[in-house]
Image (cartoon, rainbow, N blue to C red; front, top):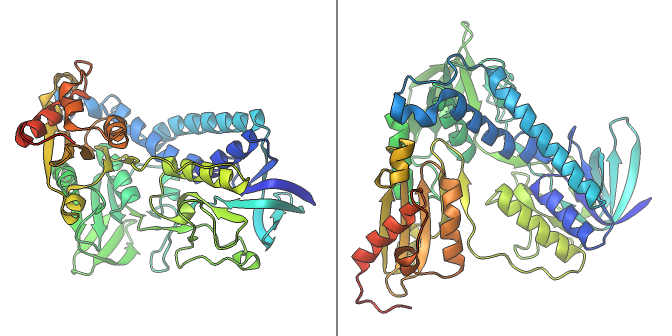
Length: 468
């Protein structure tokens, strides 16, 4: 039986970061991946594919240039599913190649197969050729990620009614698409297909969407979606999904309304991929959504030598935070010191337009009773925005009136997921409004919006309030 210092089940962001971290500390590490290639959900069906699809759609449609040349402008007149898939495959090949090189360089062993517990220290691995082996680990990290939630009442067929994994394999782009679920994944794909000039309808039983995002940002985002004729049926539940005799889909809402479309994407939640792990043999139990509970500081489960990280432990379910969780878990598992990461991290939604946020929302500031002021900058107020042809985009900064410190940064618009890191740095370094007012930004850039928003807030706050 093979003995390792750390066994890692799954090679997504948290698994690969954990494995490499432990290997750098001189530990013997084995990564088990049941997929055809390393990388996990993030590389093959999640983060990388959806963002590649988004970038390809924006490039081929000429979306970013339509502010100058009109809504009818397109770089490629006839865009096919093959056009989208071609770039996707190139990107995925590169990601896998980089990851395999990282494993080789750091002497991380990895193999393909399905892992399940025999006891808290031992895994049984069934390889593709049917061979079964046993491996033992002083510590074990579960980084198995999630899979789409597929309720019984949805007639999935992989062609016209799909989950988010199957969407990447479509043969033709639909003229109309209904997305059930207004969460991050649903909204990202809905807006990407809208940019491809597909008629998109979004359905969700909740009356609001993206509730963890600042309300003013969501309102601006919603306006942009409605402005390009996306239909949002919020507060309405999809009770029945059927295929019609004419090859289309029919969705009956609890309001009585019927939606007819060519394709349905069901994106209402995901499940932790723990059902095949035989958790009971290790003394573990997942919740109703297949997720595992952990200590948020060490990512240790209720079984001392077993850790879990990434999407399988729930919110925030980001590739970026999963990497940090994996790194921390690996250090704790092998007995190294693990420092807690900075308090504030960015949340990115790769919709069209992008949304990114870091720190407190205005609603959270109100709930805490903190006296505050906001500064707003619109991208069209910057010279760079004019050069890019932007007529939308918003950056919002929230400051404490007492200490003048930045409390939150919230952005919707082109490049939001890149711009947010300036605000993230200021938040973690406890910077004040003066940083934005007195600092020099490259000109012309969208980053100049920080100065505009800082001046806006500074003017409202005045100079009479003592600095913290």
